[in-house]
Image (cartoon, rainbow, N blue to C red; front, side, top):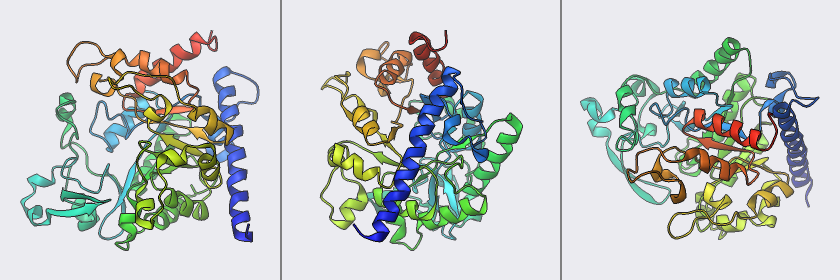
Length: 391
């Protein structure tokens, strides 16, 4: 093992130990045990200030407002989210980082209603998939600020369309200023959970995300181990690059077991997600990251009818490697829930989300992304009360 590799693994091990202590500390905070840390991550509280299971507002409160808007982020906090996923980071042509679910913005903004941008519509190959629409990297920030956000899945969330056109696209720097403002107003540290989106795709265009993200975090003093910013990516090499640039907690996102991260495809790495979630694969991840964000199906697989089966060993294996687990995504609607938690036949109607939350919390996960933070907070109260934690 070379000197540099030893150094990097030492950094990973140190932060992994910190995160392990953070999980225990968070449990203490929920349990009311001695030693629960301050809520101010900038003054020693860090991850220990977060309750477990942690409720993470997925793109804000996207079950109620168009995702990745300040309306969605604000509501997530109001509904009790411990962390807000703000946001999925993609670049503009002039190098700014903005918050959109994907670089293609035809489905999340009103760009199609702007005739001056009609000529920008194009087809690109995004991680091997031909995608037609408008892309953030073809717009300057000033041009993007002329657009407004719209609901991404209106057929399922028709009520969210009431807010179409109300909010603009936020930049990541605006998010950090909002985070500071909300921390002051609420008297407790607000946490965010940004993601680098398609980093290999953007690096090939000369728009590397990691260096831009690290520069912004350093400028705002939020690039350390106690900073209230957890960074995630579906590409392990993006997290490895960030491990050398910042001290923040880092999380590798994991899709279906038979898929390959796109950076692996580009470099010819034959491994799939199934390889990454073996004890050996998790130990490797733990050398440069502190957590994983698996799809919920990796935690509890589904049968052919969409019902839950026996939980996998992923939670135990990840914890054995010193990693936390923040799986994604819990939603209230029938078409997103395991079949045994459906109510009625309308796919857009709410099912038994509380029952599903209970089933997933029982596996020992450390937190969960959810479009409905209020449901998640109540489900956590029920779960902890059932375990005799909150009386």
